[in-house]
Length: 90
Image: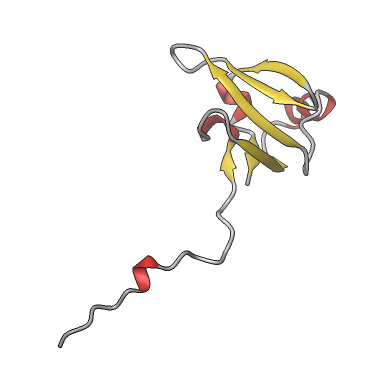
């Protein structure tokens, strides 16, 4: 009797790589890993509360995908998709 290798049914134990906040699905909580982008713009995002370790959720997207509404530290903020692309989450 031939038995197939079932290794493709096992979940990977490594954590998923960081994804850009501009590409994550709506209504799911994420933890900020890092910010990568223009220095002054990333400093502005840090001032708004987008700090590593903080949890965020994308609650709404405009019909064409820009801007995104993001909840961070209890506040709802609208970010352009290009700004959200500088925030990497896991």
